[in-house]
Image (tube, rainbow, N blue to C red; front, side, top):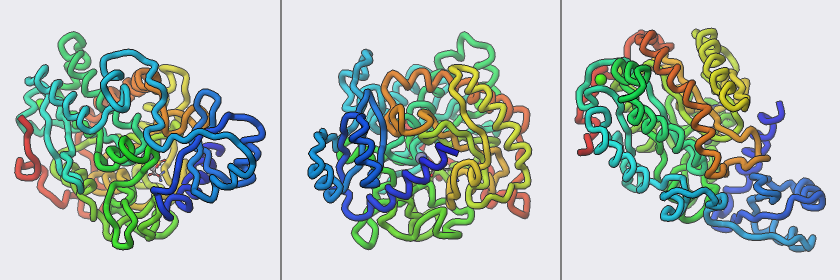
Length: 427
Ligand code: 0X9
Ligand code: CA
Ligand code: ZN
């Protein structure tokens, strides 16, 4: 499969590229000519994205010397690599990253939503990042301040710092529910019957680093013992954590470094505590890129006990998404459809709760079309094509409120009721 191959290829190269000195790694762009593509292939360079006829590449100092030797003319873009802010709108002019949200802008916009819809929206700080940024959840429900024990659905974004589009899709879903509650009876029915939890930015420190320093950063900002930075938050969860060195890396310098223990990071602890404290019936963790919808297991190619259900429901969701713009989302088991990962969010969440837990890799399908760097104009159509599946998953969860955990015992390790001691309600 081409995109799977490309992703594996990209990750392998990134893993070997980033360890050394991230500060020395640059993103450059060159015109997309056959001479440039030939040279890139010969030098084994990591093609990140094609945007408007230019190829973007992450290069080490030695790569750069080779490129200079070939007489190729390149431009540097080590900071944002944001697509040109051609779209209008108030956000674009003031934000350093255009229509995308920085952590501060996310906090401001969530706070504004809470003030506009106090009967339906509550911001809850579910934890703090290493650098002490609040990890913000927006709870959308009737009586959002009360724990009514309704079936809950969780939408997560931005485990990986550079996957900016994954912040916007859950955020826009929250805004959509709130703005349409008054006029759309179907939205009203879903919001009344369920608790919809939205955490658009699980990794605020890494995200901030992509805004200010290096657009292509993936991990959080843990200062590792060997002087390198970052743990891959999507390798730090507790199901089959570190079970092999293929699905995650023990090397702190690697881009898929799993950390010193499962849940060593405050960001994954926050998600763990949130999930263990409520009656979640389904979840989606958004990533980019490659247009996939995948389900556990990721750590093995063996199926879960509920593979048939996960696949059938996943196919329905993927079908709804494809129907909107014709862009195809492939549905399959994580470990077979993409590549093996251990310690990923959805494997753990599924193992302890039994809920359908999906990873959605948003567009584009491969590095052509932008890779991790979606245009601002792409945010709205990508949201539109994800929306029906998000609504359908909430609907499904209301009808199937009591998942059975995959792990033996059948009951959850933590009490179901979520006390305010494990999180603070933001006024
Ligand atoms: O590698 C990851 O963490 C995810 N892909 S990404 O390109 N966004 O980094 C995929 C996680 C889903 N799990 C598996 N495919 N096994
Ligand atoms: Ca409620
Ligand atoms: Zn990701």
